[in-house]
Image 1 (cartoon, rainbow, N blue to C red):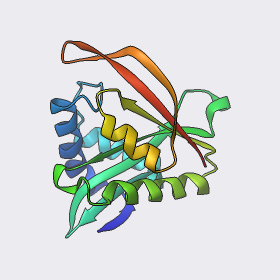
Image 2: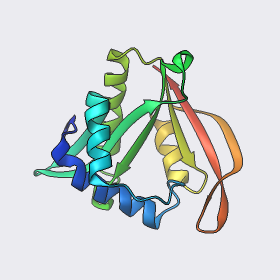
Image 3: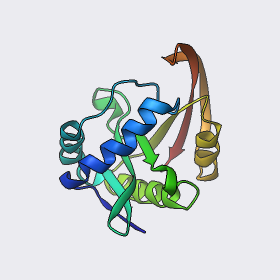
Image 4: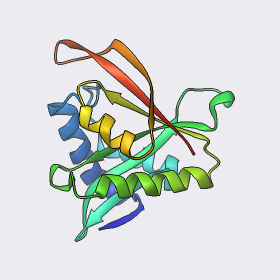
Amino acid sequence: MTIRPAKACDAVPICAIWNEVIAHTAATFTSQLKTPDGIATDIAARGPAFQVAETGGTVIGFATYFQFRGGPGYRHTMEHSIQLAPQARGRGAGRALLAALEEVARQQGVHSLWAGVSGENPGGVIFHARLGYTEVARLPQVGRKFDRWMDLVLLQKIL
């Protein structure tokens, strides 16, 4: 497995991974599918803050971060997103992606990295806790998907 910065040509496989999660799980509250063009734009804008995992030339997951909230006072605080293809889960790809993303964040002066995890994704909460993230808040019923209200768990790691 290789972890590397994403390239524009990765937009299609990233889109496939992300859209599977969006369409079929409560791991993200969004129901709006991603497009390859939108992902390519994000890759170009974020540079090394958009990483992919690949094996045998196939993209099996990605991790990226973006400013937690708007405004200059939050410029050192980022929120990340990490998604894996089903065949990559439980094999260390997520751990390797997040480690690489955290290193990029440190190099770019990020102080605080956040994860917003669906309350219906206890595996995501456990994953982050094992990697040093601390649960700092549970926001009840702030997300809505699949005709039900869902909690958001916020986890933070000071880099």
